[in-house]
Length: 135
Image (tube, rainbow, N blue to C red; front, side, top):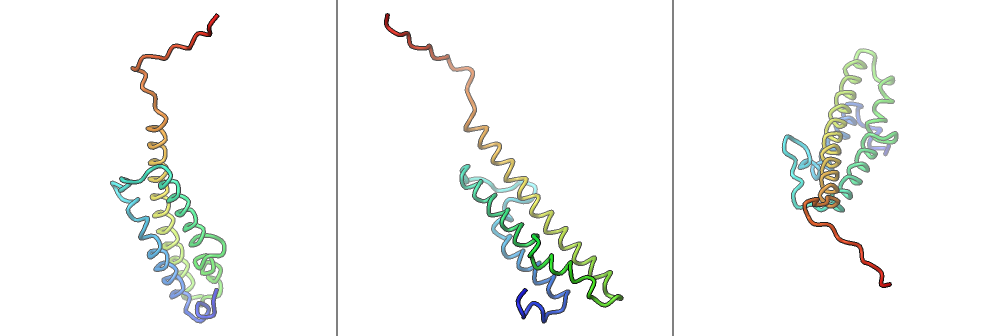
């Protein structure tokens, strides 16, 4: 954590972490919702997006993330504010996790569909006969 983050109130730290996540997650927002927009992406691009999403998850929900630091600081918050602060941290973590999970699942489904399309075999085509060796 930087010095400026330590000087902020704990609730401000959590809100700053949420806003930072939302700014970075904007590029993945099209992969969420009832009809995710995965058109125009080939298999390699979708795999690259999935890797980027995993890095985003690690950056915002990993052990060294700002949100994790906020969870560790729950015990240092005043006792009368501790419950509400803990609930705030947990609700924001749940929201971030749900958004990441949905985007990740849609990307996995797209990868599976793309691989199925690439690897499909048309069984209605006539087979190829093996070459006979002369002799």
